[in-house]
Length: 218
Length: 215
Image 1 (cartoon, each protein chain N blue to C red):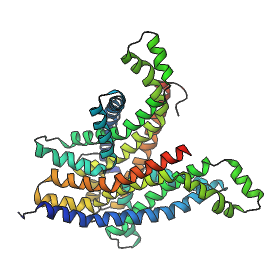
Image 2: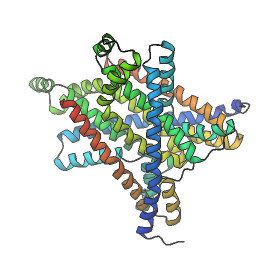
Image 3: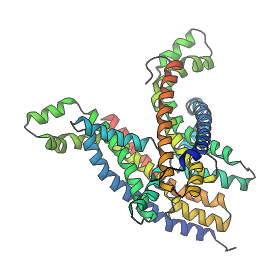
Image 4: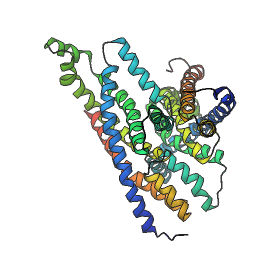
């Protein structure tokens, strides 16, 4: 093994890591928001919407992320929608994550006792206020560990978007190994970077969750 | 440009699907065997072997599968082994699967009441007999649903082996797409084929889950 190339490559690796972090930050925010809307729609929306959401979840969960990514990046232009790689990656990741988190958020919504809604309505809150202020925070607290795992899984999946030339961590690794001819060492170092990032992300989410949602979040 | 009829595309994709299926089966069987070994370490009475297994699981669950495949594909030649994409794909997916399966089955072992072990010991069984006759059969039976669920995950994961050059469904579809310039149709069909393989398994996992919940 030879690591003489490493000091000169740190800049590229850091640059790729920042893009990976950007991807997962956007995916987390957009994906969580989308899944709250999706889970609420699946419970309270019109029948057609409920069915559409259910099918969306099934299709996304039963096809590979790589194929979804290719479909969006290579397929959509034939409908006249041309996306830049970074945007296509964010869209694909968000849509993929939402399919998993719609189920997770839904399970959380179901787990909040109905008495909570009744009590809040009896106090004179509007249904929307009840959902946002009473039901949702409790649901998020219940599902937080599952949500955290899904976010970490999404970060690891993001390695695949290198295939449509998004300049994230894996893409930088591909470039580096082509330049240095030290394939194994390059991927070894980058794998360790991913490991550190996924451990740090998990810790960050747990402490952040405790602060926002209160104690008892694990 | 070569003319491809829809049937040409479908036929070639179906031919490539054989490899996706074969790879999934090989990885699932390999992953189950290695996963069993990891499980033994993970639930052993020795602190260090437990730690070793936890580290193994954390490593494979904390890094992208794509990196694991790259390391296989570029690492084994460093040990002097000439390696085909097929070998790297099977080995990479086997290790990946073993970590997840070991963790799934361990959750089953943990779910068993302490009394099951005590009962085994009081019958005079030694550790391996307890595992074989009492603990593992129950642990496997209560984790059947997540095990099938993981199989779906594994089938989808075979798509990544296209990137290290294994000629499965996605790699074939890339080649067809380059010849036909019909990404919408080609990737749509690929998604459909994966869906038809995975959806029945998802439904099966769901019915197992329901059955477990009503028991």
